[in-house]
Length: 381
Ligand SMILES: Nc1ncnc2c1ncn2[C@@H]1O[C@H](COP(=O)(O)OP(=O)(O)OP(=O)(O)O)[C@@H](O)[C@H]1O
Image (cartoon, rainbow, N blue to C red):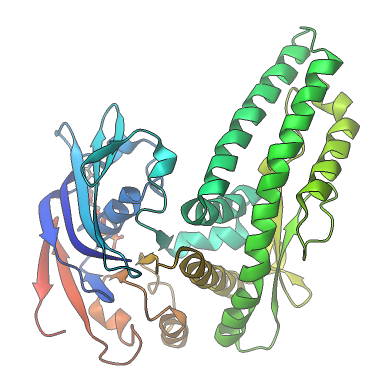
């Protein structure tokens, strides 16, 4: 899919800008603190995702204004059909509209504008804690698979209820064994659905990520990405919900005393992780910064491929400041592994850092110069 036109109003340092992005490559250049990231952030949150840098959506409303608006006309690859997506950000919350119709359930927005965000901070998908890796796979799955979205909502609700019961038990309230057993079943059932979705994703994602990693690293070590749970999930190559359900249930029963003492659910997909290894090296703990960065890029490129295959639509790529920390060689390697067919928005302080971006030298695209919340189309690209 691609963004045909975009309007950003009273969002961060933008008063009001309208643009018609190029179907492929959009370079967004300008000095620091001018609004490059803000533009990508506007597109990202329009897709329904949380901002990578604002836990409170109010931070994105232009200072002194009551609300921000981001809207786009989207064109679908499969049918050429167009869709209008609009987000109103107000102090009270977010309101999304698709073709003018207000969307009441946030989960129904995800996937309308499928996108992936990548910045140097995404190295945390490899180097950071397990929550980063869980968020990575959940967001991919939630955008591409409505069943997974629904399953995730259900799991979060079950987890909340079960934790409530365990917390009450810590405070001395009676949490009957029978009641807990019911919530064990619920948690194991909805947890197993999530784990099976995640295993299916990894089965497809891992080989692609390994290929991309080897192309970038050039040292021959394959990248291994595997699911890590502290309960039996059966054979990961052929995901089986029943095996996962039983494994998780057994683990919950074994953890009964500890959970009653701590008042929290100690096993399930909310605590699982991914192992990311290159050869013998667990990159999460022992990878060099360069290896971790390459593995993160490889995971994102593979995620893009997976989402495209699953949705039948190419997700929009938002690449913020990705070239800044890299030397010439790494920069070139990075730019050549990026999917050529994606509509891409890529920021940099200087256009020269993006030399070689796109499928071939001199690839078609548009360059926008950003200065204090104003965009200017640079002629000639
Ligand atoms: N809610 C807001 N209202 C008005 N201006 C804001 C708001 N939030 C951030 N800004 C301004 O946006 C600017 C930062 O923009 P942005 O983060 O897009 O920078 P950038 O061009 O990507 O720079 P860098 O290259 O340093 O990443 C700052 O000048 C900041 O004061």
